Length: 317
Image (cartoon, rainbow, N blue to C red; front, side, top):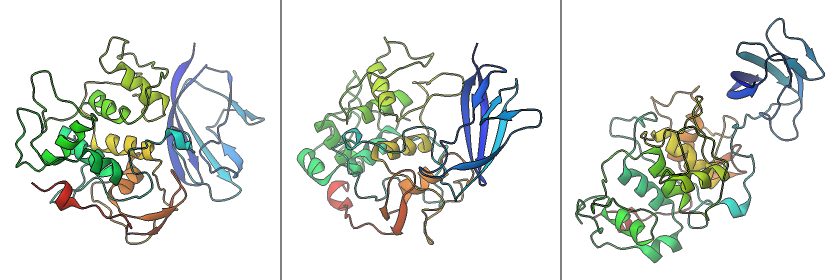
């Protein structure tokens, strides 16, 4: 019976933690998918007592730390999604070409990656990321069609416009809940509306086919945007964190940088921990930049963006 193990891969000092299923004492192929295409891992080491032969070792009954060196300086890539995203899998209504800031920090100088994000903040982030043509086609400055939103509120234009485009919806009682923390299912529902529905393999133990968000979650799985937790759950009703939201959006838009792609002077945050799984996704979402390449190995060439977003027109009451 397969058992889940936490396997820590360290390649030339860069670390990725993967949760994988292995059968005890069965040969396992050592993975080199964490290095850039064209680079070759030349030397592996595993804990004492594990015999390595032909690039394989026997999985013990404990978690494993694997260390490797390569023929060149590898670039770590995430376990999911694929390293290259086909053009047809990038949402056409969202601007995946210009990499400008879509998540703002707080007045105290923090970005709070592990904090929650509200329905209004998520709606506004996606609204900012629309192509200009799409945004102009749905733009309205009239009052959003919900009982709990006033035309004078900072998020009215975004919610009203995104509702016109049918990217966001309110609740059956006529409210929108702008200041409520958005759940993981609600967030994925908005994301999935930018793409054609697809049937993915949904294996989360807490997502049944009767869940209202099942098709949205299935679509997000099929495009490689989302992952569950180590215990096999998705936790659809749990508030999504800001870091989780940024990571999914970056995956949608094929945006992503690593340590080798950064340039001096980028905006960092005191609470964006360098060794955290979300570190580079937070930087990607909160820094304007010109770039070459694509996720996860963009090379930033400028800390400005040629794209201009008219925040007064599109957002100010």
